[in-house]
Length: 235
Image: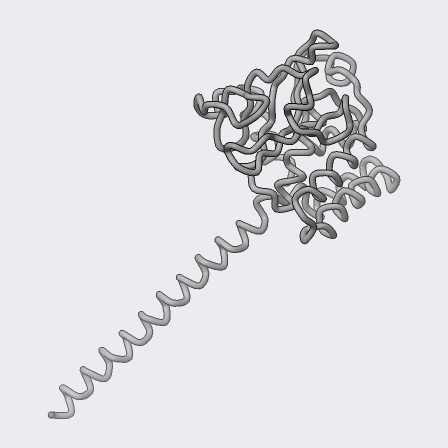
């Protein structure tokens, strides 16, 4: 093999080695980004947001947010049922029930969890939404959580609760701000299910099991608007 040919092969091998390492670097970056995104997607608020809240609302208010953050950070390894109880109790204890007309001067407004905590008040939708996103941050699968519209029979009015369904055929557990105990759906005879939804879809509701899927939750304007506002909050 002459020197020129050897030199050409050597240069080609060197370029190939560099290309392989560059590709490996890109792959590692992509996987790192995916891993980071997976960890970040359910973060309720950033440190930057906490600093903004403290500056605007003071230390007394920001302490409530730190308590909320501790709830999520310190209970990742708890069982699902323990997480359900912790979150249900936390928001039922933190938030006063007040209707949208008094808080937001609107007939129907779905507040983000941050907005609800800042007001320390909300209606049934706000309780439910705050519980839903906090449980997601605690690692509970979205597929097992459904925001559910019901009719509260004793009050003769529309109401919203959060349900946890372990499997499609399992009886759901109900997290509520009226009856603060977590009970099976069959025990909540005061509620008549109408429909439920989450980030993955929308279902006709059933007291004893998951109902029939009927489409995307993107059809619900208030839900879409809520998610857009939540994305903007932590910018």
